[in-house]
Amino acid sequence: MNAVPLAVTIVMIEDDEGHARLIEKNLKRAGVYNEVRHFADGTSALDYLLGPSHGGQRPLLVLLDLNLPDMSGFDILAKIKDDPVLRPAPVIVLTTTDDEREIRRGYELGCNVYITKPVNYESFAQAVRQLGLFLAVIQVPPPT
Image (cartoon, rainbow, N blue to C red; front, side, top):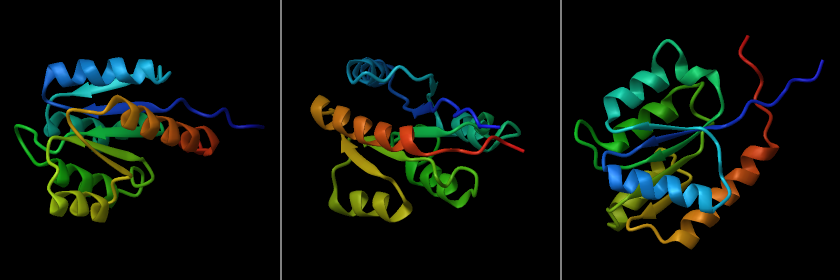
């Protein structure tokens, strides 16, 4: 019996509604029409990701702002990469912080791509396309 690949859900953790709409628009421009679950704060995002449904046990791509009203995106990134179920999920950091130490910290904690806002559409589209190709070839076993 062949396993049917599960569609990748994009979890966007972004407190600025204008940025969130722009990101969704750019995803569509890049040809990405996956389900987007938007969270405006870290607490609700972590409840979804680490709660009883564990992100619905679906393969995820996380778009993460670092400057959130209730916690640092670095804390969220660390929790994602510390969790055995979520660890494989690619994480794209989208933030206004372009300090070299912050960028280095993001990669050390496990982010796959670090993009500063305002988002350069071509850089963003290229990152999403590359991760999309990666996600298209991985097989995620269904939950047991």
